[in-house]
Each structure stands twice: as C-alpha cells, then as structure tokens.
Amino acid sequence: MLHLSDTHLVDETLLYGAVDSEAKLRQIFAEVEASHAAPDALVFTGDLTDKGEPGAYEKLRDIVEPVAESLGAQVIWAMGNHDDRGHFRTALLREEPSYAPIDHSYDVDGLRIITLDTTVLGHHHGELEQDQLDWLAAELAVPAPHGTILALHHPPVPCVLDLSVLVELRDQPRLADVLRDSDVRSILAGHLHYSTTATFAGIPVSVASATCYTQDLNVPAGALRGQDGAQGFNLVHVYPETIVHSVVPLGSYDTVGEYVTADETARRLADKGVRIPDAGEDVVPRPTVRV
Image 1 (spheres, rainbow, N blue to C red):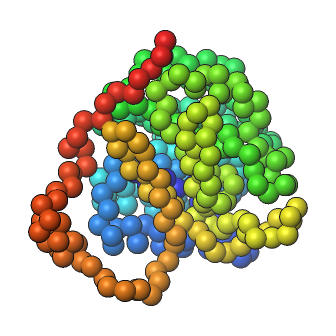
Image 2: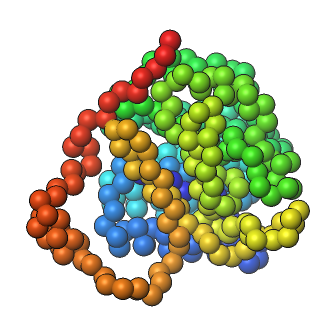
C-alpha cells in the first residue's frame, strides 16, 4: 500500500502563498508510476484539503482517481482537521452531505482497513465520540482474515514539538481500551507533518510525513517552523508475521555506486537459487485474538 497524508490542496495556486501542494502530489504519483509499483491500496490519512473547499476536493479526486485506476489500487480516504465533512462526503465518497463523523471499514483482499474520523468541528485537536468507539469495538469483535489496519488523522503518540501538544488526540486511553486484544496489526496516521513511529496499546504506529510541506525538527527547543522540503509518503508492505513501513522521500538524487536493473537483480537471485514470492502468494495467517 501507499500511505499518504496531509496533501492540503487549495483552490488557489499556492498553499499559504508559498507551496504548490498540487504539484507536490502530482510529482509523487509521477515517481510512483515510473517505478512500476503495483500497490493494492492508496490510503490517505487526512487534511486532504487546507480549507475544505469543494473545488479542492474535486481537484484531489481528479488527480488521484486516474492514478489509482492505472495502478489497480483501491482508494481509502480518512478525514483530517482541515477537512469539511460535507464536501468530503459529496466529492470523495459520493454520498449525501452530512456532518456526522466519517468512519468506514474496507476490505483489501482479506486485510481490513478501518478509517476513524478524529476531527472536532471548529478545532484542530482530535477526539473520538463514544458512539465511534462503540462502532469500532463492534467491528473488531469479528476478526478479519488478515487482520486490521486502523487509519486516522491524529496519531495516538506524543508530539516532539512543544506547540503541537495543543492539537494532539485527546482521551487516548479510551481508544486503547478498544484496541487491546483486537486484531489491529498497525495504526496509520498523519497530522504532524513529519514521519515518526511509536507503539500504542502494544500496536505499532506509523505517521507519514506530509506531501505538501513538513515541520523542521532541527529548530531550537520550543520553536516551530514549517519548511518546503522533506515531503514524502510511506510504503506499507504486509507480511504474514509483520508489517513494514518505509519512508519514501520526494525527489530524485544522484546515483551512488552501481545501478542494478530489475532484470539483473532477477538474474543474480536466480543464480543463487532465490525466488521471492509474488505479492499475495503466501496466505497471511489470522492474528491470535484473546477473548
């Protein structure tokens, strides 16, 4: 899968008058298509637009859907604090507009991906309503064949930038109570504009950096600075016993050492009697769930 976050598309040309967030996203997809990747899903963890404008959602859909079709990938959208539930529903989900939380369960060849809406209308921190937690518990009561990945915008992890604590996910222990002993294998999130990893309720958490602009983690303690650099996305490889999250930076760089083509790689592996199974060739066992 590809895990992308915080695209922050706008109706106007530049985000905050400084960053062409549309061009950044198009560049990522151009590089992905050039690599001949074949992901099963594109998972977006929120802040898809910056102001929730209908035109920005239409622009996003027009960029993503043709790429997804070309790659043969399912598109999975999660809400972020900069998004508008009504316009999100209309443009991306093709549903009637509503301002109720947007929570969904998707099946990707036996792997369940659940999106949770952590947004709070009029605010930038995250919360989950009790009805959402009850729905999540009911979904997780029946294990999925290949386990579950939870995708949400606000990550249940500590922020390393002081000012960001104001916009964290609140009441995290309530979510942890639902997730413990479930078949959730990994949590995908965004919001922070930098890539980081942690664990929550014993579950690995992977936060994707933003595709538009990122936070500079080399600022003096207590400071905050956005930067037009270090954008990227994550590759998510699901294996029988683990899930691997790999950060892919935006851009191309000078080659160091030997460039080995795909054909040459195949030849060298064959010479050593090594064969890597195709994706989906091995059956992922159902994770153990204690009841």
